[in-house]
Amino acid sequence: MTTIHPAIVPIACLLLLAASCGGARQEGPDEAVSGKSLAGEGWRTAAREMVRRQLRPRGISDGRVLQALAATPRHLFVPPKAVAGAYMDGPLSIGHGQTISQPYIVALMTELLHLSGTEKVLEIGTGSGYQAAVLAQLTDSIYSIEIVKALADSARDRLARLGYHNVIVRHGDGYRGWPEQAPFDCIIVTAAPPEVPPALVAQLRPGGRMVIPVGEYYQELLVITKSESGQIKRAGVIPVRFVPMVHPPQQ
Ligand code: SAH
Image (tube, rainbow, N blue to C red; front, side, top):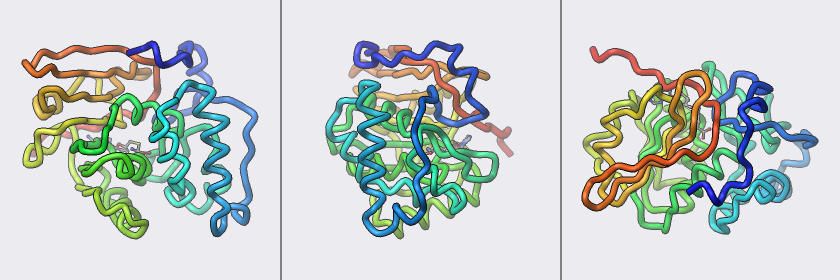
């Protein structure tokens, strides 16, 4: 599990990070690009450079994953004032105190799901929809839950407008999963709970896998697998820092 990741991040590096979601480590230098150079098909050059400079050197090697990130217009998932930094090596604010995850973390978590193209995937924490857009290119159906209604609504519109028609976004508390749609072949959690939510484990299909950051201030990214007989295994991958998973008490 851990062998495919040469980029193990010393926890000290993480102290350099500002409040972030889906961040591992910052690396420089990488430049902001002008909004003009992203116009038309120009963004594709920035996306390819992102893959070449940020993902490949850190050990992301699944060609389908690299291709999906190169083909996703990340600048359309950030607020207008953040467009120039859209392909840079870090998380960015998307408003409501939330962020779009660092490209490397999106790539790593996607790679860890081992998608073959037929899986039904649950994502917790839609944000602006970038991770969902990447997943949409790699498998059949994505169900994504976002707890901030304004983000859920705008991500739903954005994903539809950009043609990612196999993503269904719902406003709600992902801690409880999506029981009406369970079981899921894969679950990807992009906000950090202090412990693995039992409902998510229950909604994972036997033979399925979940990628989830678990912990309080800093977290460990875990891969949780459920065997055909229902046995649960956890493997730690890398230290990370995500926004906390909000879990309001049930009304
Ligand atoms: N997947 C996003 C990451 C967004 S940051 C991306 O592609 O960039 C994590 C998101 O999780 C935030 O938008 C936050 O509002 C949301 N979140 C936090 N707790 C949640 C919960 N209990 N259920 C669903 N979403 C939650």
